[in-house]
Image 1 (spheres, helix red, strand yellow):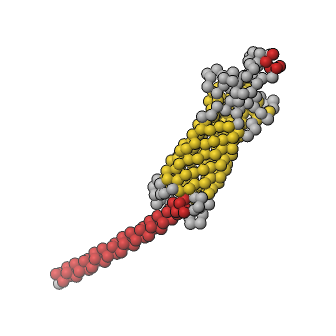
Image 2 (image 1 turned 90 degrees about the horizontal axis):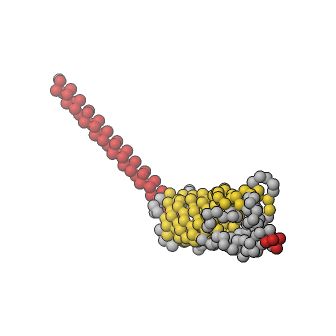
Image 3 (image 1 turned 60 degrees about the vertical axis):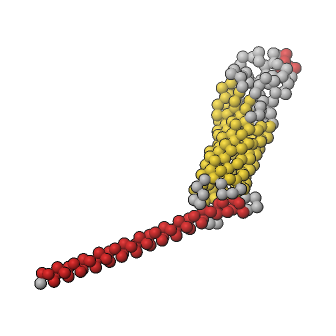
Length: 269
């Protein structure tokens, strides 16, 4: 009787083990199948970015918004017109075109409005004989065209990190300088700047693949360094300023380069 009971218990235990193993096998199979299906669906969705970059006639088109932190590089240690320049915040916006060459590389062209601001202490006019100086904030606006070569990584993923580098050209719009003591502002800066700028630009960030039909996002940090001298070295002081000690060409020896650090967001249609 005990042997029969023992055999019955063994039979039931064996069946339970077999049933448990079968259930675990089914669960694992379903899990793997589900993950595989999701992975394929995810990968297929992620490939939309490369497909549109390459197949669309002009690549991806998007709008770009960003926050700037700009400053001026003065060539002379004790510049009489710009002393101890400091970064000021600005903003920018524009459109972007991103044309894929393959699954790795693409060419990006932006058309941007750039607000690049800085504060500095210096002479309020061209009279170098006057010891008085004034602290001002200068608001410089540019129309800027950067052209960059972009390398994308993590092919087939929804998050696509990238690095980019290239050059930009810019044209300055009329500037405004405001006195920091609140006495007002003038339409043109007291220390005039040239109208054209160019330099190099580098960036790093990521694309984000959204749901089908929702487009794509990108976020990046971008740094640009001007290589052009934006000091208006051809300006001449008037006769009254010269009589008071100003040089005939007060900015002849000046050399100013502007740099900018941007945090950018873009939405691609």
